[in-house]
Image 1: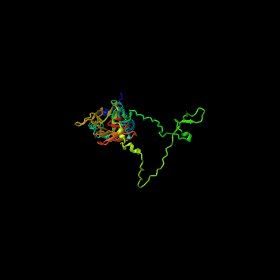
Image 2: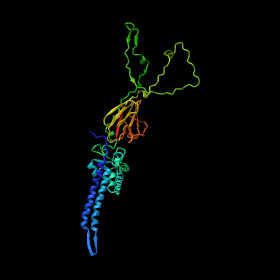
Image 3: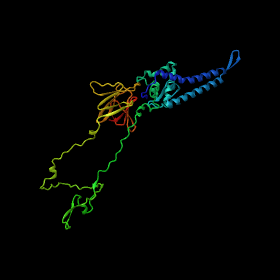
Image 4: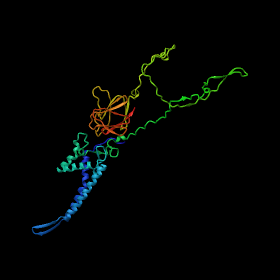
Length: 386
């Protein structure tokens, strides 16, 4: 089964990964010091003084230091482009930016700078900084160094790897887009009968011709109906001269005017587009579930309605706690879905059919058109026509 949730890296794994990253340079510099110690020259000048030659020692340890520096530069670029380090690979962690993609050179530099400065207080400072995500009120997502660099650390063995699945909002791209409706050909309704070109062609098809003076006397012979052809005629719009001033009254006809015989004209109210609009909306969650909404709904990890409010409650699983207990308020009016963020911790956004992502201010309703995707925390759903 596909892992759709994002799992934050635990404090213990983060500390272990950073310790593993520091093992190679420690071994390199330690080995250089061990090799360089026997190379220190010692010469007794007198009974009370001696001369030490440290040139070869510094040469060996300097070469070891350059190798260690090269390792750190390599590790810096590797993590900046892929989110991987030796420790991250060993503990199943990945470093990302705030969108779930590769963090970049500057972000990794800031993270390592803060971790390095923690060594001012030996051991204790390093451990406190590495465990600082335990003090994060936002679901233990970020340590102090993560907040400064705007990065995250995810456990890709327990959850989804955002670096290869489209970032933090990756599950919204799993559902295939619905194909557009097929276009049907429409024939022109302007079709009229061909006008007769001569008086002989003007004789109706059902009339009979009478022949006089024939040997058998006068008799009626039915005429053959002429074929009727149809062809479309262009519609010609002609300007009509509208009289101004007082309009002359109609003449007094002996017969009743056709309009008077038809009775009083009744004006019907034209139907609006809203009267034909569907009264429900379907939403499809990124875990495959779908719901048909007809009035109001609340969505979150454990949504709850206030008082006697009658709403549909939709709960979603989110072990990373990126979704608030009552995250969104959904309302359907005349076939339109209005989405309101309930001042959630991690916020919400709507991605339209044009691909443009719009963050939702807390407490303000926003119309999510069919085909758009609503993101809340690390979860999402797609809006469809019911």
